[in-house]
Length: 162
Ligand code: THU
View 1 (cartoon, rainbow, N blue to C red):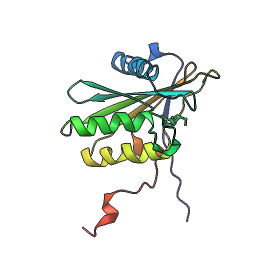
View 2 (cartoon, helix red, strand yellow):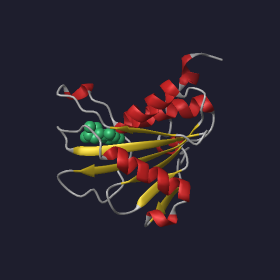
View 3 (tube, protein in one colour):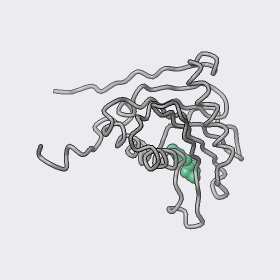
């Protein structure tokens, strides 16, 4: 037996095709991106998280001379949300990436570690977190849940037998 796992990705040509709230969130991710601390990779990423109460939390990548000590934009933002708004639902995360070396023309998906970190909150709140992604230019991708882009994810159900 074989099982096929698939998901639907929404593709937009411009931000004008997005709902107003989503276009605004993506714009906030761009603003955050421009404040990234990325002197080593010169690859700047911004993340903007929309909470259930309408507040928006921002994050960007924070690099370190000891490279593994740095952190991606998505985790900076999601951990800030978790730390400061533990009772708020996380509705959506917009991610925008650019490079000081070349134009990023395609959406850069969140790395595996970030997918896992975001998934934790999706399991916790039992409602989907949509992900909106864009490079500096080009198409915008949207997936309606982090689970879609992290199939067969590890989660806390494996930690106990209940
Ligand atoms: N980066 C992010 O901020 N998010 C990702 O999902 C992928 C990569 C950052 C980490 C590092 O500062 C730079 O981009 C190059 O990998």
